[in-house]
Image 1 (cartoon, rainbow, N blue to C red):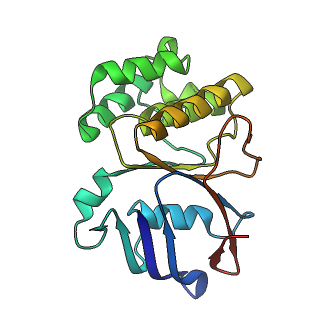
Image 2 (tube, rainbow, N blue to C red):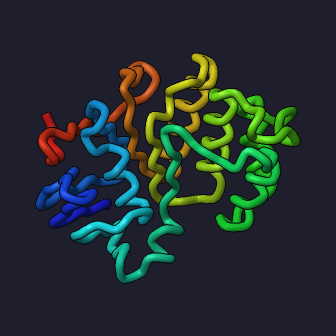
Length: 208
């Protein structure tokens, strides 16, 4: 279970999020909201990337009390990943392999799955937006976290890659992993069963 309580986040005097409680059980959850509503900020709070007021717990592990253990249980893929242009895809994957303590075989299988193997020795600065997105998904799925947070995972990738992503999400859910997704595009209900849908409205998270 993911639990957020008494969350407040401001950038200067601009308040982005302010709510008392939000809990989700294991499963696949979709967070909707227009640009500027706070989706990415919420994801960065949950993944431990930015300071905030309040408490976040995943399976009773508190982010502020046990930050290293908490972060090891979460994988976060940014909506628009930005990597140093001078590194190769393989070097970035090697970094994730080390930090996630993942197996190389898993990384190789993911690269082949998303059709990225032949591009891994090229510098990231020469990647298209679609290639960058697929590289970020490869990195996100390395290791075995409890919760995957995917911010706009469907943008810039083709239909075939989106179908592969749907399948991978279903496989991981069958293993007991959970997902928190955001997307401006509609999630294909025929290809991915959602356990719940939430909206961010006026700094609050609501379930319509």
